[in-house]
Image 1 (cartoon, rainbow, N blue to C red):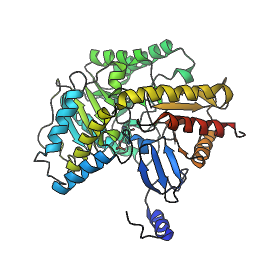
Image 2 (cartoon, rainbow, N blue to C red):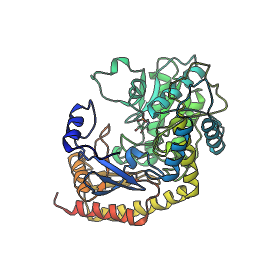
Image 3 (cartoon, protein in one colour):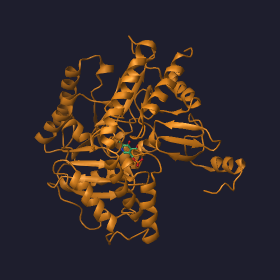
Image 4 (cartoon, helix red, strand yellow):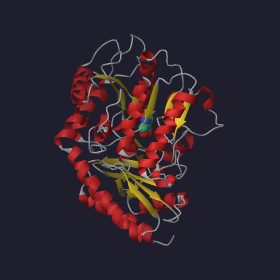
Length: 432
Ligand SMILES: Cc1ncc(COP(=O)(O)O)c(C=O)c1O
C-alpha cells in the first residue's frame, strides 16, 4: 500500500471502527509487513508472530508462490457466480479430497470458518431430518462469530445475541489439569456426561456433536487419545453425526494434515478454514461419502467459491508439501514444547505446557499447587513479550483467561523458537 497517509489518518480510521481489539488489551500495533514467521509494525519494529495472525499463516506470511497464484487468478478471473465452476475450484476439490482421511471424499467451500461451521450444521440437519434435538457441543468450545456458530460456543448468558441462538446442550470436555482427576477418570466422567446428555437431558435426538479436536480460543486444550474414540462410539450408537471443527487444528498445525489423523478418528464432517487459504479467506467442509450433499440453492453464497482464494489454497497446499511442513511442525513442536517445559522449574507462574505440534498452550497459575488461574499476569506477560518482539495469544474468549497460546507458522526455525522461549524466560523472571 502507498505511504500517502499521516498518523492522523490512522487515528481517525481507528476512531471510526465499529470493532477491533486495538483499543483494548492489544498493543494497538499497525502491522505493515509480514514474511515467514515475522511481522513488522509501521515504526519498523520486528516481531515473531506466535499467533500466525489468528492461526492462519500456517505456511508463513505472504508466501510468494501463494501471492503470485492469487494475483494470476485475479487477473484472469476474479469472481464467478456459483452456478459455474472455476478451474481452481475443481483442482482444489480434487487435491483436498484425494488427501483427506477415510471416506471424507466430498468437499464444499466458503470464505469463513463460521460459515463453514454453518455449512456443516446444514448438512447435518439435511442428513438427520428426524433429529430435532439440540446440538451437542463441549464446554469452552469456540466455533465462530456468525449467529449460529456463536451460539454453539458462546457460554455467556444475558447478552444481546442469544435470543437467536440455536438450541445447544453443552457437555464437559476433559480437563484433568483442572478437575484433579486422572486422565482416565476424566475421560470416564466426560463420556458418562455425554451419554447422560443424550439419553436423559436432550429433548429429541441431537443431529450432531460438534467439537474442536484441540480447543483453541477457550482453553488451548487437547484431550487424552481415548476420549476421541469413545466420543465417536457414543455418537455412532445413537446415529448422531460427529463434526470436527478443524478451523484451527487443521492444515498441518498438529503435525498431521488434520488433527483427526493425529488422534486416529475420522469424523463424519470436518470443518476447515484459516491456514487452508495460505493467508487468503478460504474455509469449507469435508464430508463423508455416506452423507448426502446439498440440494441446489441450499448453499450458494455470492463469494462462497471465490476463485482467487481457491487458487491461493491450491498454491498453499503445494507449499505445505514442498517445504515438508508437517514433519517440520512435529519437530519444531517438540523442540518448542521442550524449551517451554524447561522453563517450568524456574518460573512458578507456569502451571502446564500442552498440545501437539505447534498448537501449544501454556497455562499460567498463581501457585503451582493450588493452580489458581493467573489471568491478570497472563495479560501482563503478553504485553511485556510484545515489548521484547514476541506476539503471543491469550485465551480470553471463554475458559479462565490464563493460557498463553503459542501457534506460530509451521516454517518457524529453531532460532525463532529460541527467541520466543528466551523472551518468555526474561519476562517471567521480572518481578511478579
Ligand atoms: C475452531 C474455530 N472454528 C471457527 C472459527 C471461525 O472462523 P472465522 O473467524 O474464519 O469465521 C474459528 C476462528 O477463530 C475457530 O478457531
